[in-house]
Length: 274
Image (cartoon, rainbow, N blue to C red; front, side, top):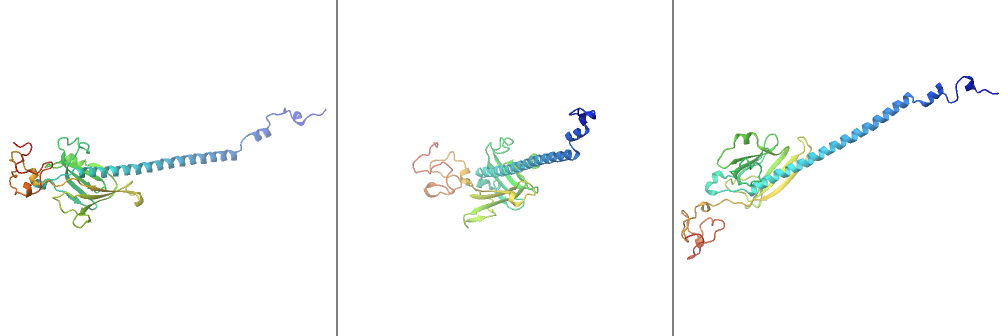
């Protein structure tokens, strides 16, 4: 009878021999390769995740910059549409505009309750508003009631409308030359049309292609109120001129009539005058 070599050696069939253990285990090279592949996979996942985060942050910064620029230019538009001036007190209603690295725009307006910081000036709707760019490249807004100075809090903590401002330029339509001019010299008058250009970057050192520019043409519906419109009209007889005015054609005083009033016809009594 034949005796198998394995049985002769005392090892049962399928036993845990050293040769079999070596055939079932991983070698050191295989373990190192598996660790390397796992590291590459984790690195790829981490790189993809960080790239997504960076792209998301860049997109959010760009969207925030565009939104800030729109809000800033809209705030200036809202203030300009509420501008007012009275010729009899023109020294208090002067319209200042200056271009440059630290551009400034200042005028008086009757502002609505929805205007920024109106709750602070609840009892003073007529205020002087000043938009300016400071040395930090920020577009700021300061307000003060008419005939008063800017308080300490407003000077120290002005409202920041936009940051990283690369440019703020104002142009005015000259009705005589029929062209845009970048200097407004008639400080006693309100310009009829302005063109505003605001440039805002996402970051302080953003390249030129990352700068957002918004241009708006604002038609100011206001005009200076003539002194005759400020004179008290109560107690005048039909056809009587306000004191200090010369009679004009059809009884209309120089400078026109107050808004909403009708020319006085001879022999016709004005409503509300007894």
